[in-house]
Image (cartoon, rainbow, N blue to C red):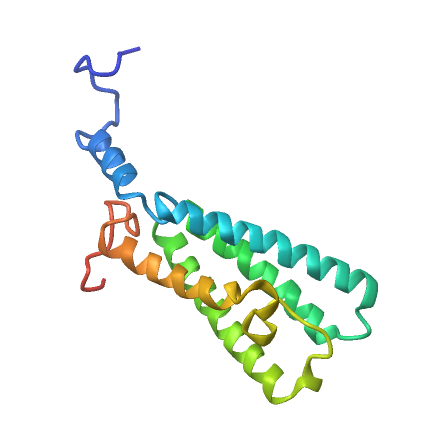
Length: 170
């Protein structure tokens, strides 16, 4: 077996394999650098929303089925965002953008409906009052997620196998 740095070449290896791996580690991708903190917060919210939904559904589902189902849906969105942000890559990038966008839309729609018609949600959801019960983090988190995804895409953070999507698109 050849040793690293001896000049021996593995079958199927490419000349730029090591450089690409180093570049991606430096760029951080979606799950590196400050993105790790974002992934950690999403993971905490996935756990919190999932636990809340589980307890609500198991104990009081008949009281507010829509609110509790929305909490479960929010937990699923947080899990999806966590995994997609942590993995990186083209597909994960797209899934993360979709998850953050759905989360932002959910917070805005549920928050607005809850204010306009308080009877629509007889009990709180993760997204009620724009995430008031969680310090408005559910409102801020998807915005930060989308901004981070935009930043990593422009800096070559791994949306394509060859190191990123050009700033202009495609």
